[in-house]
Image (cartoon, rainbow, N blue to C red; front, side, top):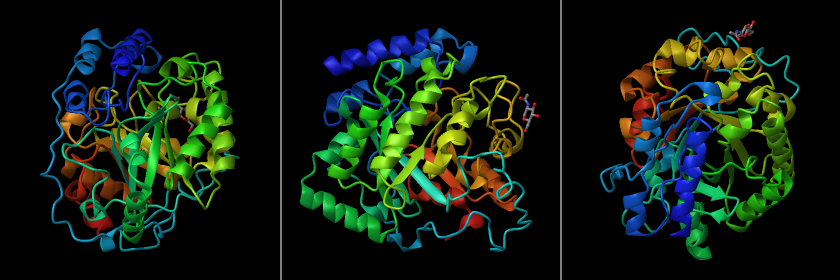
Length: 405
Ligand SMILES: *[C@@H]1O[C@H](CO)[C@@H](O)[C@H](O)[C@H]1NC(C)=O
């Protein structure tokens, strides 16, 4: 119950700061029926970054006991074994796999100004979060149920320790963990943990970036994981626009990469798309500053292109021209700002119920945008919130013929 109480306390704080978007940790506890009832599967967007007013009602409807919306068994039974998983061997620039124009518009050349990132995304990455408790589960799904994905993010680790699916994983016995890992490895699926989520504000809360990174790295290594995703959603800190959030993230990333060396561990971040807008929206740079400083330590970005009202709901808005609310934050505009195109994984909610404040696209509409993006030289991949609404059938439909295995 203590955790439950803090959930609401934090929620109030988020609303008060008119923060935005998010992967909300779903439940008060990862393993009780109560958690299913109180938490939700949703990754709500609550408010708006930098002053975009969001009606309180939105937040309230988000906060309180949403219907569970966690379809259980139905998802992906009978999926073939993971052999068809597009493993990450392809290079940043599509090498003429028959995609139409194949003009690598901005991938290679996109990053000349960046001292941090260089294109090493080696996608495509097909990523899915798993936070919500799934009735009857005894750990992660069978790898065969995830055919089409190649990264599965147990959510979330918090500064207080694991919660939800991260807890479930850490409580498995070592033998089960290792056999699960072997099964995922054979299927080409990375098993990672995602940190923080929308219910935690590590910078605002005063967490030490180095100690926090050390604790998280210990969790990763002690629990046989392939890597870590940073779902930093400290809107209050970012909205100070004074560089403090950026500095925190840079210190944290530097330490975490030191403890989880490149090549051995996968390390991603999951910023919301507006954080790539740059000045004047974010004069201190937000994630453009993070990428410049430590982008080379980050394997790719699971960019949340949702929960910003209707932004990013059209192909144009998603790929080539974002709205004036958050300019320069569509996929190819972010690349123009110096972030390697092959690191910009497109994140989308799986269903209407998985969004809180816009951004959802139908599977077919998204597939069509994905094909368009690939035709322009993008191949970073797609992230979804969350499993099991985003299942094997979903990701395969999104990949469509453009990325057919
Ligand atoms: C978008 O980025 C370009 C540089 O790529 C810059 O010239 C332009 O001013 C930016 N637009 C806005 C509205 O920030």
